[in-house]
Length: 116
Image 1: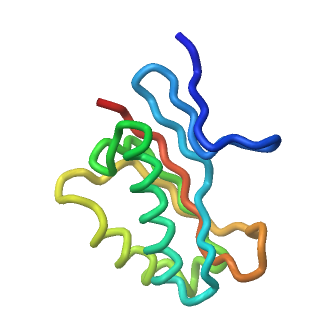
Image 2: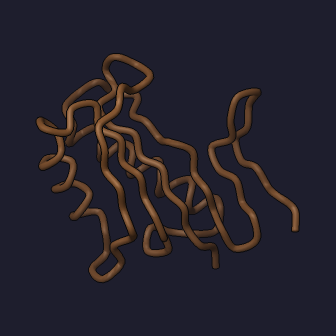
């Protein structure tokens, strides 16, 4: 089986497809507003990449969510996350605090999904 990479540059690919699996790199917001708006933007990016890869949010197997300040942002992020998920389609998930790449970024999300 071969690997298909989407939106690649010299450092990373936005997605890597292998067989029926879709691996997304960490998606971050471009806006520097609040955590709810940033989470919504990241989830929209995930929707777009999954669609391009032949998948959708209901096919997510696993998600890792990185928060700049878990104590301040966890509840608001969870509210947006829960509203985005379809009932009965919650993936396995890890949420943790991390120092993120840019100062204004409060959330980064990466997922693994199935295609087809």
